[in-house]
Image 1 (tube, chains in turn green, red):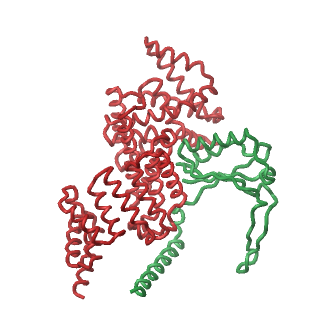
Image 2 (cartoon, one colour):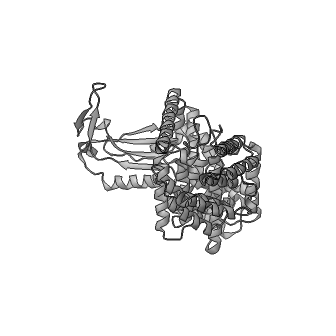
Image 3 (cartoon, each protein chain N blue to C red):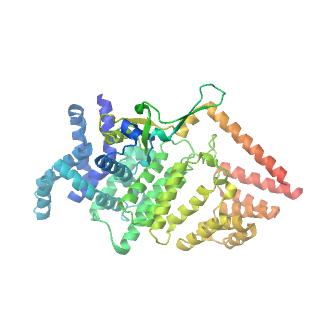
Length: 150
Length: 421
């Protein structure tokens, strides 16, 4: 099972203030632990939202609205993520509990979310039907291509 | 937290910590069976006490300290006259939890490496190595191992007990072999991990939902090994191979459960995160600057497919060269047959056919249906339909798989219609 540990943004992370050395060391040590346990798949930190854009669709079917950052409400923003592969939900929680407080001044927040596996989607019959139709279309296109090539 | 929640949490912690604890205790008492028993005792104490006192801040260190205390008690009870044990017990006692934790960090990698060399020791049968490794290094329960291999739980339990007994009887040392022996023993370790992986991989076709667990465990163990033995290029080679192969786990089977060949798989659905990890592991392997071993070469071949955006864009020339290198490192008729396919894709079917024809009298391929089936393929491309039909018919008599048999017979019939037109 894959889980994503999402580190929420803080006023510091949004202001582009780098965490202190102590925190960086603690994070590094934690990441090393994940690597040594063979569970880390990916981990990245994100730049402040001032460097990002937001695309929204307020009118269905219409052109999207594009907004430049920064965005307010730091706690609703993401500062980084760590993707792990573990055997159980409890194991994921245990790893998430071991992550150091990511900001250290009362704003630290980690959200743990489970990643959908293809099996989860396969259970959805609508998805399956779409898949099969798509496949058929590709097959027929292939056949047409072969015919037009010869 | 309810009691069952606490128990599930303890289970998860146990799985995360048990290998380290068993490894450290084995160093202490030099008996892997005893080490596991002592570690289990610590687990039982945790199961009794944690629901009351709550889960400790550092549960790993708590379990380790508790288990080591059991170890010290055990040594004392034995009243071993061996001065070495008495001193060891004394120095252990002086550790505070924090110190033990620090010492742990430094030694743990070495101890884990020693433990895996032990559970994959050649004195054990292949089956026992796999079972014992899954149990001690991956922290799987006997029940989980049994379900993964589709055998009874008693069989696995007995296999593990016997393995531990054999290790003790044969006085297998708890150490990392050096020199020439190291290479041999390391390849035994890699073999166990790859065997575990393949067992899971080949079983993903069908409805044994638990078996992919083996793939995941093998991959995890490989990643752990890459951290504790970073100088071993074949370890990275094996990890690369498993990461890339895992990236196709979900696309190898169609929605209706039929196997989908590599060339027909939907590449958009490959797991590109795992591909990237696989390529990174391969790069780590190549950076060590040693000649590529069999796992690294297979990984490099797998990487060629992973990097091709479409099946047509596959770099068959490079694949053919890699198979050539592989057949030098581990000569085998099956590698030759694969090389023939790569050569035919790269340079044309007649070149591939030459190699296939040289394999005609190979005793190892006598019953191997893929030999005539590959030959049939090449003959079709050369428009020699009559001969191709004979090959497919021959192949259909060799396979025991009904679905495959049907497929081969259909191909034979298709050849017939080509001849008549």
